[in-house]
Length: 210
Image 1 (cartoon, one colour):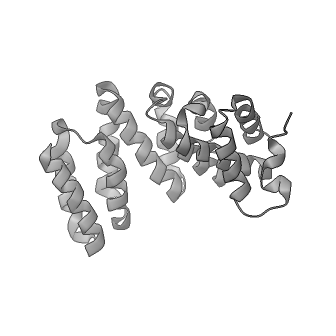
Image 2 (image 1 turned 90 degrees about the horizontal axis):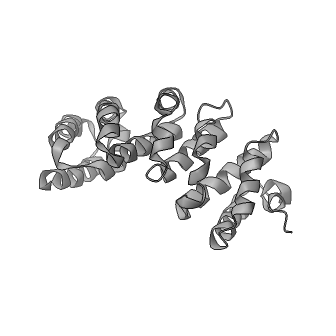
């Protein structure tokens, strides 16, 4: 049996991510659930270097075949506040990839996600916005709880984040609260660069069509 862990970059003496990306491609193409479990085990293990490579493999799988890692949502949630920042933001990246198909598991741990969003790195916050947006999209109950968090974020985030985060939020745009998003984005628009304004204007146009 092929030892999946030995295909990680660190086990090959490599400092680049190419072996990890190639491994993610292999696991997806072969739907290798046993191999993915081995990567999950490495991600949860004590070897920091292995764990860091494993989370890379896992969120790359999430970008390609999210259903293959959706069952491990609980493992990612348990790591979003990890002291190892690589594991923390990597886990939130994985959650952003699977949030639309693992919404129930994520929503019941919403306080954990919010804590990571408030206290984590920029990348953690970026991906938290995607998680919040996909939860809003999932159903009206989740929307009622999470939409205020999302709107407040767009009201208070740094100007340079407004366009990108509004784009992430756009997956949950709907008629019922289009005006709320329009109000927030119009208020933030003067603080943005011309290129950022152009991105926001596309979203405003989309919202006004709803």
